[in-house]
Image 1 (cartoon, each protein chain N blue to C red):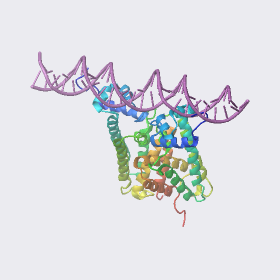
Image 2: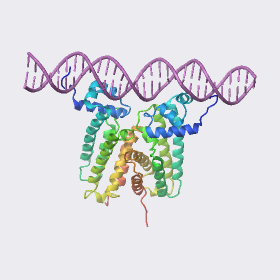
Image 3: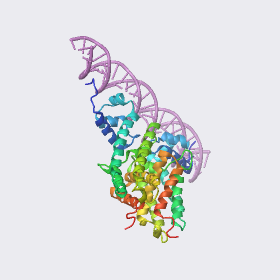
Image 4: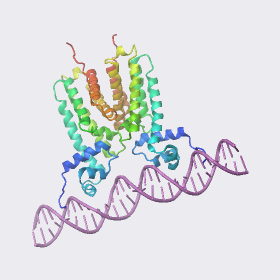
Length: 194
Length: 194
DNA sequence: TGTATCCTTGACAAGAGTGTCAAATTTGAC
DNA sequence: GTCAAATTTGACACTCTTGTCAAGGATACA
């Protein structure tokens, strides 16, 4: 049984992502990935070279999907609602599923990894910051913020990282949402003037 | 050379802490700890049983020191200054040293560990929340907060976790301080009325 | 001084993970 | 139909790590 690649790359990456999110990069072995994907260890080495390379492919796919999702959540005209939807999307990303998959970039950020992976994680956060910045600096949004858009973007990025850690420790989505609401209230006071 | 314990436990725990903070629990081997402490692997097993036990001792010592430090930082009568000092202390904890040691609890929170370790990490965050809550709920403090003390405490705990992740990714203490100032400005508006 | 106790040390066995490879097999193209 | 190319598979060698243990040596106390 061979000749042409027999596995569906999209499927393999999806299953690998689940394993990496559940166990983290370091604690995941190629055997774990082979079992989860149904592709033999040797085939994975043949196709990707090593675990880091396979992780990078997985991470790239994850990053694209994550950034697209949160960018869409931020699209609305009302910055307060947009920010709320953004945080909702971020929380959904780490809590939907059973068991909750957690945030891949935050989990990876805490591990000792190679330079390439660290660069990718930074890239994701840079992208997140840029997307937030674009939304927060819009006319109609910036004026409603209690702090400059740049500072707000950075604060929100930092805050989402904190949410990811809290999710790992307490596993309480409702509490995450409540904390997120607090931040939104602070950043975009409910009613400028009624 | 034997008969009575030859190593200084305090010294061993301090050196073990440095290794755990640098590599994380999972990526640290007993051999790493033996090399760093100068105590043979067999002796460590004899004294502590296994890596988890040694980690728990290390973590307990770390937690006590960390909570005492931040509690002291929160002591001042002016809640705004106290909060600022608190965040300063938290940032110092993860950035002072070369290389920066990072935040042990945040790093550990992201790893797949046993139930005991997870309980300890939660205990540290619970303690942090309680300390913050006590300071924020004080008369003279609560009134100056833009949100209820309870929500503020939770937000600050979550935020410090985010700072720890950002430290790992960007390694920029100045940026962390700037972000912390933003949060303080939001939580305790500079001047209630001038 | 004798002895029981405890610590240290190095070695051992077992298991897990990595990366490589040759053999087998299948496919697509000529 | 034949052949070259690519993939799968299982095995192999190597390293790292764990946990245990027996032997050796020092200490405290009687």
